[in-house]
Length: 135
Length: 147
Image (tube, rainbow over the protein chains, first blue to last red):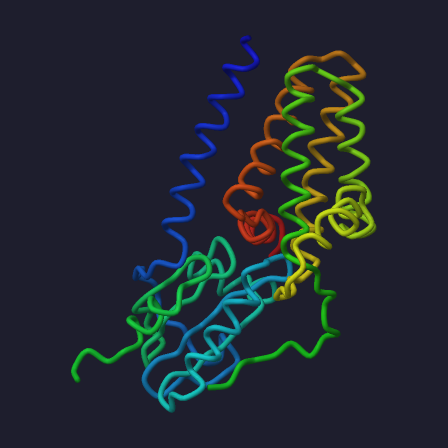
């Protein structure tokens, strides 16, 4: 009986965490961090924005995120998608406090973070975030 | 516009529903193990995690159950998933199951219960919420251990 109660509590807490986890994945939020440089990512920035994706080998949603972001940026001349391996950029990962993969940063043309999505973002979330507001 | 592609050899892709079915079976086995304190069930789980983590999730017992019994019924197409994610999760599971087995053999109750609960929670999150353990802890491990 005691075991059943323990089990119920464990599963309840896990469910609460799981619901929170699902809800917060992919939502855009900006963090204040030192600007990224082109040298650090080994690629030039997009003219207006850069979608900087951090991936790792042991990450299932990274592939889907990669496909989504490259599809979204395909028709855009001023937004560039750069996918980097988090493991081989650990200094940058620490500097930007990247904790899990995929994490996607939206950088402006100077490399300053203007948005961040932890986990696989949804198409609308990305499109909303990269659509210029002054039109 | 451009995507930096890794030129390394392409990873093996598997049906993403497989690992979730595996997680569901794992959850059932671990819940039973937790409630009955069965050494046998933990050893069965240890065997699953050992093969899944160190050989291939496809060759592990639950993976075989999925391919033989579940996949033919599901049919349909799927977008392949990198096998390394689920394999990493199985390795983490191996650690917990190994500890729990030692706990069961030595009759140290907490050494059995705590790892079983951790593995059970991971399997539950994976089965119910498509939680990717590798995404959450692999980078943190790298950050903590490498320069």
